Amino acid sequence: VVGFVIFIVAFVANESAGYPWHASCKINWEIGQSCDVVKEKLATQFQAWHHRDCPGVSEACPKLPCGQECKYNLTESSSSTEIKGLHETPKHDYIDELTFTFQREDSGPDS
Image (tube, rainbow, N blue to C red; front, top):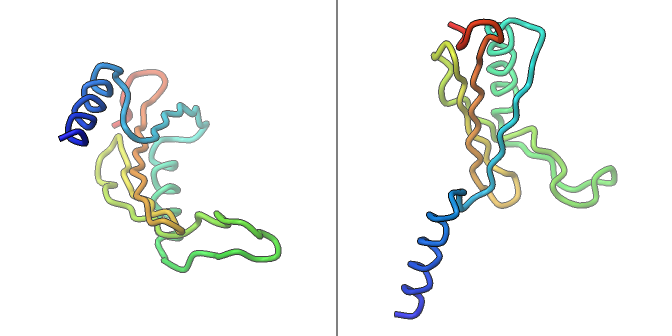
């Protein structure tokens, strides 16, 4: 019963605080290329890093994480304004959700 009460209190505190229970980040970049070019480059990078062969520790990197250039999965690229994907962290297999939203500076969403 005590564990359940603590969970309810934590849930109510989280809901009233207005922030997620997990790490999150929002970044705005201005890139001097068209949205289509940037979307294509991101999709290509997701494909290049789709493999599951992640580097471990080495002389050059004696402590994890030593590389995150693996375990990426492009999940949505058909939208004209978004690309979505997942990244599974190499050591603990946490799942990071990635969303890239494209917007033209002069007239709203790039379509």
